[in-house]
Image (tube, rainbow, N blue to C red; front, side, top):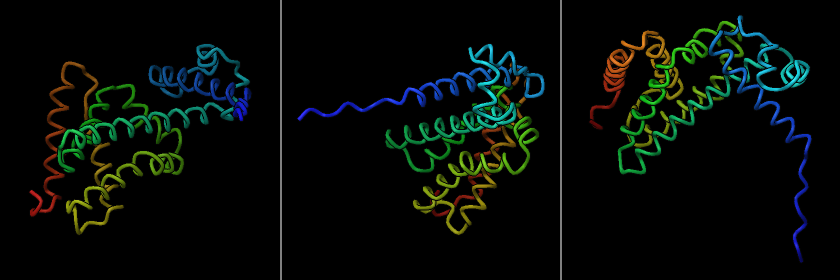
Length: 210
């Protein structure tokens, strides 16, 4: 018997397309202008939708900003996981895979507009509670999983996984925040920051796994 074709929900597809267009346009404007200076009208015009569509899907500009921040943080998590999996697939150690994921996120911090969006505007605009909830779902949640994974290999034993995840993520964000806006000096700063982070992590690593 022939299978019944799956019925497509046009309304859901249209809603998803509208949200994607708004978030992509908003990311461009928030990155270029910052939250306060990014005009709602320009974001909507760039997305090809009405201002009413923005308020329908997100409530207000702040709601759209929260969605953009979560989208960016989720993207960073995916990049870090891909870097980790690539090392494992090539026969690398769990430790090398962990360091590769750290280096990937740190590298993303060389993008000054993205860095301002995530480290300056996000906590200021969204407040500690909402920003903290996004971190729990994305960056902190992923870091917690990474810590648990390498603890299973005997690394970072004896340390509380939740506490260590917060410490490492805080150091990573701090490292990103230390990078200069000056493109001429950012690569040297990146190399130095990476070296500092690796030295700190090596200090936490169990001696019997070295």
